Amino acid sequence: MQILKFSKFVRRIATGAGLGLGLLCALSLPAAETSGGAYEVARTPWGHPDLQAMWVNDSATPLERPKAFAVKQTLSDEDFANLQAKAAEVTDGGDAFFGDDFVKAAIAKGSEYRSFDQKTGNYNQFWIAERSLENRTSLIVDPPDGQLPTLTPAGRVRMADLGRKFAGHQPAGPEDLSPQVRCITYGVPYILAGYNSYFHFLQTPDHVVIY
Image (cartoon, rainbow, N blue to C red; front, side, top):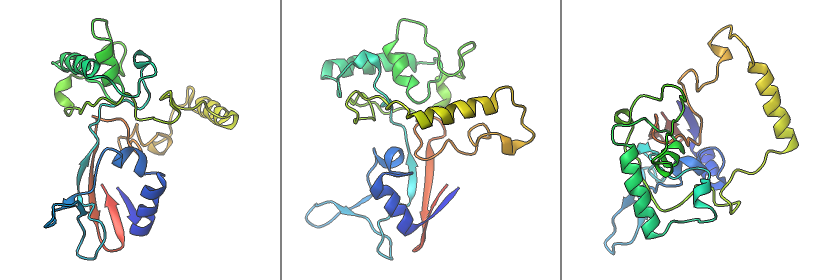
């Protein structure tokens, strides 16, 4: 569970840090109807934007653009219909695909594609929420190639240090394991869509609780 001061929560969304990027990019605040039919953000009794709801990240748009899409930022109607048909095939009782693997599996239809567990496969698609496809080819729009930028030299050093830290390491207790391994959280923003990707937002005048 995460508890944020409301002012800090709003700042995070406004700057795109922490929460704003992955969790809310495909979602809009609940709208209140007005007499003229114009959009108006629903508000709490104390005047803040009302975020209280069960939110879900079921977007199938991959974080990074698959090579098969080349430089296309969006798919044509024909290409999108083709992707939808392939996606329907791979979800028809087959292996469960999380995050970007869902679209990768659809693209690779006709050849063997396995997600996280390369030997036995995962449990099947029955256990996964229905994913929402759209014609965007990646969540990353800048850089224009839709790829994560290369790590800085300092970043590469940090990754190498982490690799050495966990190589052959036997944990002395749960504190030595990551929150992901302990099934506590996959982090915020959460981009492993389709797997435990539900969030319950609750509010008070001073805090936002994300469960």
